[in-house]
Amino acid sequence: MSHALKSAQQSQSIQTLLEAEKDASKVVQQARQYRVQKLKDARAEASREIEAYKKAKEDEFKAFEASHAGTTSVAQSNVDRETDDKLASISESYDGNKDAVVKKLLDRVVLIHNELHRNLKKAEA
Image: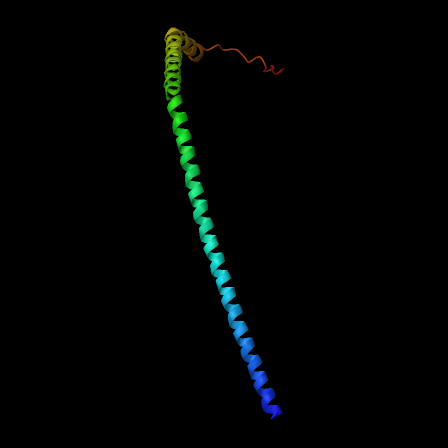
């Protein structure tokens, strides 16, 4: 009988261990699910914060852009005016000097002086 009693106690102990293992497995599974849910919640919260920050920065940029829009057009008109002035000055200079430059170029090309270059030494015979 003692053997049967021992066997029954061992079987009871094994059952207790198996139940404890099932309970532990459930606890681990619940912890995993809790962790996964917390990660999802954190991602969703971070996404909401990013969108709010992005919207705030876009609004800030639009306000900045609206306040400086007039300044940009004034600066652009100043640049355009300066460019037109410089182009007029360059055109005037071109018109005033083109005849003289063409004459100098033609004189250099057409007029030939038959003389030795100053760096060339005469060979003594």
